[in-house]
Length: 186
Image (cartoon, rainbow, N blue to C red; front, side, top):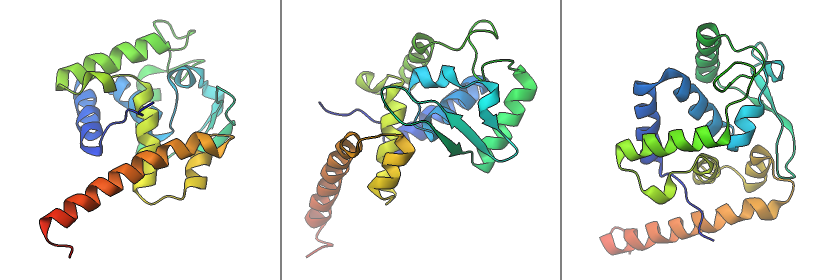
């Protein structure tokens, strides 16, 4: 199975596009990416799991993954405060049509398909789960140790994280081949 992920330039374009179109969706998509969330995990975040004072959120993972607290970066914290002030979520941070229901996986998937189609992104990447894959790949590309990526992805088994190293090895090899062809590497 080949993992689909957004290249960093694709993700930047996608997030900028969403930011221009819909502030609520932008906060939700950025939050999901930065915390490697599955679509169903986005809807499970309740207000009592958010600790803005200590810049943490408690993530209840699915699919036999580990639950954990995750750090909220300064820029994200400011966005969340503005989001909360504007939308006044009650039970669920990211609610659906009514504040007492979580946003659904189907809604998130529909949204990413729409935004991605607007930008002409590859159709096979237009699934909400692609954000989670992108998070793992981008962490590894930035040089983060695979054990830390395992923890950030909340994988209990390292084998689930290792699938991403195969992709980055392939990308590394392709970049190396390209460098050799330029003549800059002898």
